[in-house]
Image (cartoon, rainbow, N blue to C red):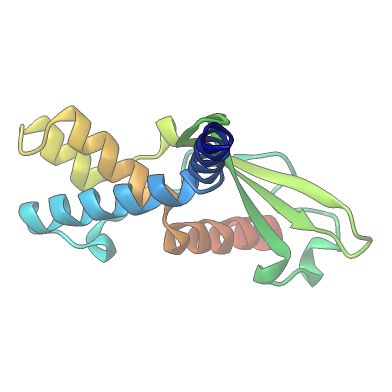
Length: 162
C-alpha cells in the first residue's frame, strides 16, 4: 500500500510539473529579467523594438475586406516553442479569427529577428553579457504588452498598408 502511494505521489508530482511548466518558466523569466533590468537601470517600457522583421503572409494592405471588420480582439497570438518540455518561445504566430469562423495565419515574428536596439548597444559595449541579453529579449518577446503592440502593428499594416 505505501509503495502505491509513493508511485501515485511521484506521478502526481511529474504531472503537475508538466502541466505548470509554462507558468514556472514565465515566472522565473520575469523574476530574473526584472532583477536584471533594475540592475542596469532600465524599465520594460523603455525597451523599444522594431517591427521591421515581421513576416506577413497576407498582402499589405489587404484587398480582403474581411480584415477591415476585425477588431484587435480578433487577432490571436500563438507562441511557437522548441518542444513540449522546453518553455522558451522561438516565434510568435499571429492569427486572425475571420468572420466566417476560420483562423487565418496573418504574420510570423521570429525571435532571432527581434531587434531591441538599447540591448544591442549594451551588449556591444559589454554592459550586459550574451546570456543576459537573451534572457531580456525572451522576457520582452513573451510579455503580453509586446504581443498587444505587435497585434496593433499587424492590424494597421494589413488594413492601411503603412
